[in-house]
Length: 372
View (cartoon, rainbow, N blue to C red):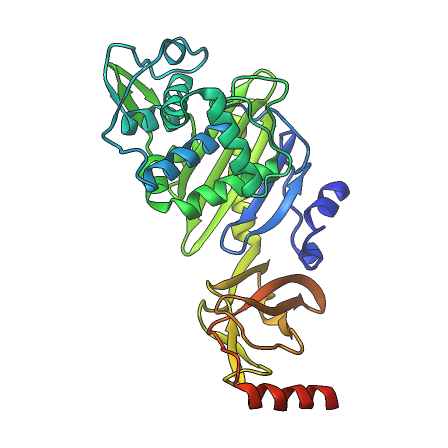
């Protein structure tokens, strides 16, 4: 238990006052608050494991991106290759001579966990599964997934194919945040029928908890039973990642425990609204003497339940801040503490631009700075 608590509070030591997390049956796990981006507790979050079908989260992310960029259309028909048709493992049963659309393939991949659907989509997006895997690795790097490597689009076992609980949390959070409409459309679907075969979603929490709206299961002999689960209760959304559990029912039960613990023992507190000024900062050599500084989106922090009143925030601004300053440029950090203990630092941006002053204005401020 001590090792779990130390791991959980490395990034947010102030959370050490929280209720201890539950005992969890699994090799590695993470529970996090998506609204604040904070990991509330974790066990072995950075240890590499086989991700099995959790791989399909990245495949979906890239397909959603292709749809957003108009490189694909949902009603577009996809040619099924022999390689996709012969894919081993779980399948949606596509056939080379039967037309299938991108929308059908997405449902076959997400709801039915079809490896054949993954290959067909990968080939459509990138020309080959190998080229698609290279895209997956580039995207993983961009998202900050430091301990992930992909060798295929489906999660079939490969010794060089791995991820971690933390990286899978980052990916799931990005998928929900970047593609909310597609997430809502596909990930809560309980079953899907294709080619005369109805298959249920393997995520049992979709039936057990009506606040759960996703997200993906995985299983191989080496990986064990895995589940990334998402629950939205009111304005808050929590994500759990569980790797290497012992059965389908256990992975659902243990994921439910993590989600319930996060909701029961923590509050999400909005410190500042997006676009609202945290403070006006002095600007030197500018056409204006001050600028409004704040955050593009809401700043939310997660704290042990009932302790929101003990939060304090201190703005550490650049000094001196010299014009020109672009809107959106970083102008300082907000240091947040809970009961005197550090909780986190958050970048503060300029909410408005400030142009450089004229010659005399700049000369006067240069003299003032020299005299300070």
